[in-house]
Image (cartoon, one colour):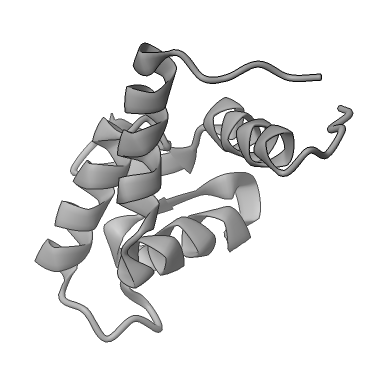
Length: 104
C-alpha cells in the first residue's frame, strides 16, 4: 500500500502537471520524445505545430522550469531532451493514486 504525498511532493508534482495541462506543451513534449536520439531544437519541434518559434520557446521554458526537459546549447542552437526520471515519477504517482502496482 502506498502513502499520501507530502506537501513538498504535491507542490513539486503540481508544477509538472500544470506544465502538462497545456495541449501545445503536450505536443511539444511528444515531438521531442518522437525524435531520433530523443532530442530536438525549436526548429525541429515547430514542424507540424501551428505555433511560432518564439511561442514554442516559451513552452519549452515552462517544461524546463517544471523539470520535464533539459536543454543544452550547441553553437547557436539549443537542444532539448526529456528527463525520463520526471516522467517515471509522474507515472508512479498516477499509478499509486489509482491503486495500481507499478513495476520497473
